[in-house]
Length: 140
Length: 419
Image 1 (cartoon, rainbow over the protein chains, first blue to last red):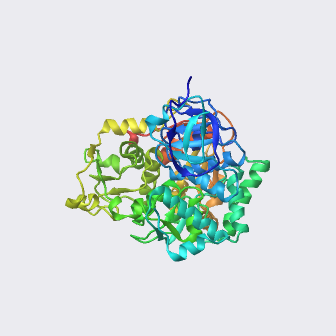
Image 2: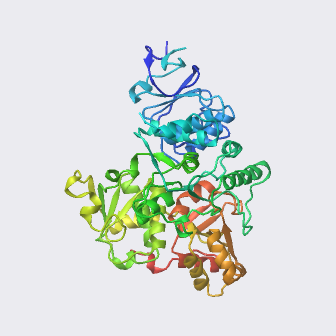
Image 3: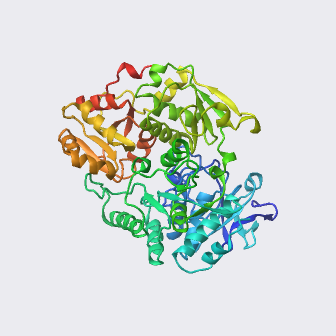
């Protein structure tokens, strides 16, 4: 049975509703601006190993982010159109990316939670995953 | 934890535009690990460039809630040339939303500068002043050449800082984080090449790649470097490597000598010294072109960052009355256009097939014809972004070579670029 072996506890960076979705652990760091299509949620960075995958509705684990000043704009647009990930998992907070969630919350839009989890634990995420509002990650 | 002052807490608890802006600044400070907020004296705002409807709706919500800028705030480029010098091919709803976005930022009290070179349009904070600037080249220039202090403020946080007059106290606002840890030594490079028109975008690109987000100090530069060349260096370094602050010994204000730039004996050991060789320069220069073998060009683009009046005047001098065979897109701010209109320079250039692009530029909005073409540029930043954003292949050359090539329609490289 694939899936997280045991429950993992992540730190909540931005709170949000409980999430349930397929894990998508990106194989390399990504810049949201230029890396994710804001209108389709596809990975479009030509040099990225996960090019062609789609992040909408996924429990998205990011092994790193490449800061672009407009990463927040891409994430905000995805939240507005309902194409955001179900949850975003980072190994360290990226204030520019997460600003997209902070602004979405201010706009009254349904905002996915953001969590902090070390890279080694991220790599164990597979299959369908549930995350409760306290940041507890279990197989769904 | 970020601790807020009584006044800041009172603002956060409100329901108006200031409250929304203060919550955004405070939440960012929490994520950045900043212990407190600090006052900032001015802002430069990059959030008015259209990336989708969400940004427009956010700006209009701030306007609806009565948000106004509390400090001086200049605007970076938008997606449209509001001066009407050039035409963006954005159409329909996208064009409408891009325009609404620009107007919403104006309605909050931002200055209609619409330039990525605000520091040449009269916005020059003093040495040591804390400010909140966006746009990577403006951030690099502000920190490095002016010696004012800013982090890279991305979309939405920039306007929130302008409305609250506050920013998170962290990163480059703190003097201990402004010291160089890497030396980038160009003493082995021919001073004649260093003084050429080619050098600074190439050096900036190499610096950005080698130093990345660390703080680097350039050593071995003799003689003065013009402000336009520092502008080109910073823009190339920022786009190639995320550089937000650089020092050049004897040139930039926080680097009178190596000891000062690196923090002297109090600071930790240097992370390293990069000894720049001619081979490294050649590789960086070659890397700026993606269409080096092209036998013809379809357009020339100059002005990233936006051209100064002196640079625009040099276009006229170098063309010397000759009409370009392919269009020359000259991107600049309305502060320059106004002056060029007054002196007749704009009309004279337009007769020679120069298209002035104001308020925006050719890599952030579709102005270039939609063809599978070749673009020649003297800008390290255009060279970096044009292939992805416009689909054009790029040939890098000096300003003089770009203009000669525009006249003939074929890429011309003079000896001055050879190192």
